[in-house]
Length: 316
Image (cartoon, rainbow, N blue to C red; front, side, top):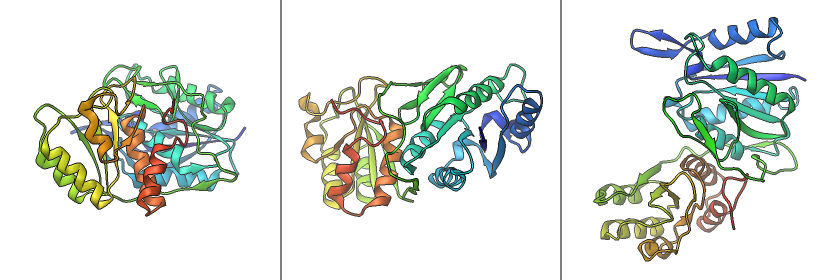
């Protein structure tokens, strides 16, 4: 078994600085090499992203950097582990599911809530578990965290402080994009807005986004209701006229959407808003970035956004 660990940054590899914890070179690398030498971890090569990132600063370009490393090294290694910051780990995990068409190896993401440099860190156990899972896992992108092995396109961060910080709804569909051969896709460098409905929401903001953005993820109430306000109606009309895709997801972490259930959501179907069903915000955002890159045809974009690719949404 040949294993490549890609260290992207994040809390797991941070040290204390005058302004708080920040990524530092050598932390993850030294830990892994020491544990490999002692026999606690399987042997692995290490590839470090330069510069290391605090995941709060992660961008779609960083998704692309990681995906391209897996693509370049796919034939040399049997499995991949990615150490990553927790704040945007779910975005990167979903993005890799879309990016790596025809993936034939396991890619396991992990990180920690406490740095390896702090007593009581969860980093050692998460790295150990991720590397052990990588040895035996089926092809696809998954997250190993706090003893949980999670679907990469459905994972979400559920707690800001607990060590058990991630969850994911189960899916029988493998977390990888089907394909006859490995092909890497890049996300669009697009203006994508994530907007949440709220009582008395800013109509100006949503109208501005509809007039200028390339795509919108709209976080709705419950099973798909929105305020019946003229500003939102005009915004959705503008997005439709501009051929700006709008994907609706639920504020609820479980259950998903069912557009058309309530009259209060009728304007979403009126303007052909995509029913994101049970997609997470992270998966919807990443999927939109890749669909925008892959076709310029508006109808095709809407069709692709509604069809499952890697288990990210369930069609009942």
